[in-house]
Image (cartoon, rainbow, N blue to C red; front, side):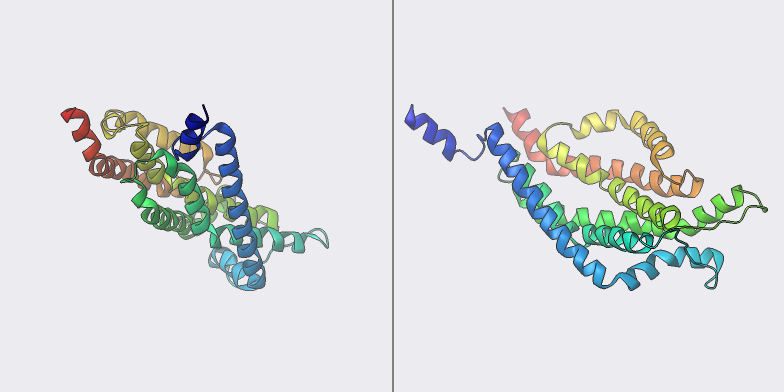
Length: 256
């Protein structure tokens, strides 16, 4: 009996539920620590970060009119903390992505674990790319939304209405651009296959556009197409990448 227990404990793939929870807690603690350090850095460079977020508003309203207004003495400081926290998540994103990979890696084969660095690198680039696409399209989205209100309505933005809006939009785009990483990871884990994804292509495209229309915070056509068109392309790329990465597995199954 003792030999069996020792064997199970020495087997890295035979993790109990408690061990999985302990591993998850470890990854969450490391991620939280990295985000905290990143938030401190973002707090120190808050003025530069704020100018970055204000730029789209200045493009739309002009540099002399892009101002935000607060209703209470603590509102400005509160938003400094919130923006610093978002900046901390951005700075710590490579660490967070690696912790995600390290948590799911025990379920992969040894040959598949070598994708750790590419996974982190690509995940970071996709999130940054998605957030930047949202940042680029935001002036057009803002013009559309202001025009929809009519010429007699003039906006008076608060940090909540503007900064909260652009931060959520960039975060939503960044998270959505992780779509191909999730699909490829599911293919490596054997949850889905490239063949199944290819057969479900039409339904996937419909769901992508439907989800974009529902979950995009701005609900404007510019943001909708800026998000959904890349996701459709990512879906096709995920099928091609999945076929390449799982080719050996398919050969083993057909050979066996």
